[in-house]
Picture (cartoon, rainbow, N blue to C red):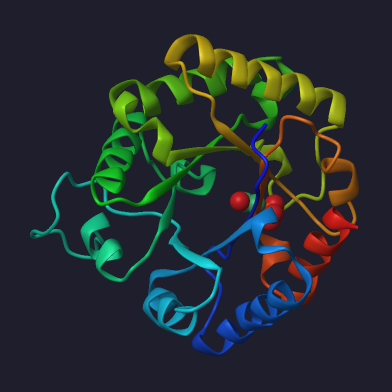
Length: 251
Ligand code: PGA
């Protein structure tokens, strides 16, 4: 386990300029209450407010990330509607989510995820790589087979860049549902992932949990001894909920 915990917000298709105020409230809280050495706080925002967020948070310890990027293996080109990692870097964006299940469900293939990771790390963006199984796969005890496959295809051609990749395990059936796996399950699943990454890639990965994280369940999730932090969707939209998660984690 790594000592500095990650609290990563994923705003998905939410957030107008005025909502950046929520992040400033988190910033104020962190400044006053939290030892800066103890956590990494990152907000993954829609493209439309990334530039503004970077400007507003220039002096903050909160870092800004995107939720995706183009799978074209180019910095620029005739790809209408696409945003490249070069453009994100130019904004001073530090992180990007890749392979979120909501993107995979709209067709992101393993091959595209591979290219996205490659392009992101080329431009010095840190990658939050999401993996996870759906409910059927979970019920049929195929969770690990699925996650292992996703990890293999994402990482195999990116072996030189592993230090810039953080893994987020997000069971799809837990995202936005309020249902989370119990700690026994998660502990043993995290152990399997860590062991696989060590054996296959000699990779001592940072490993996050995502899926319905809230101020209510964080005290239980805190007990996961192989968990390096959390990817938080719904509960990251309002500063109070997000701050309560951090408060409850540390108190
Ligand atoms: P949730 O989303 O916290 O709303 O379940 C997590 C995610 O999709 O990253």
